[in-house]
Image: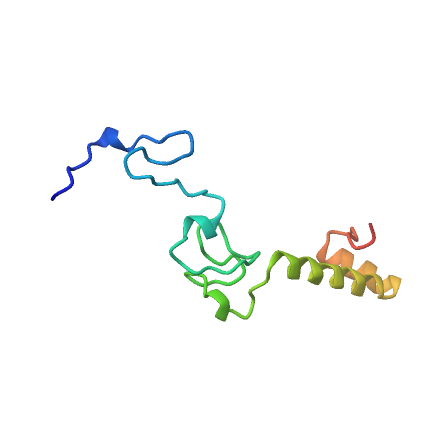
Length: 110
């Protein structure tokens, strides 16, 4: 038995974001894991909403095989290590780094 063709008006969504006829849930545009559910994208802080990498100049996410994959927890831990390393440097070197890379401010101080 053939299913009847759907008219343009048949794609209206209910309150849950599902199509009344097809039970289709609209993906969240800000969550690439949901938007590209058919792909196996990693939980990476560098994954853009379009499903591409914001760290590397590549056309698509390389998935778990990428050397730069970082979960939000790993990224935060890395940032904490960086701040501790900078705090441990002598004051003159900290000022030099702050001028060169941070416009004169030292965000690791505060």
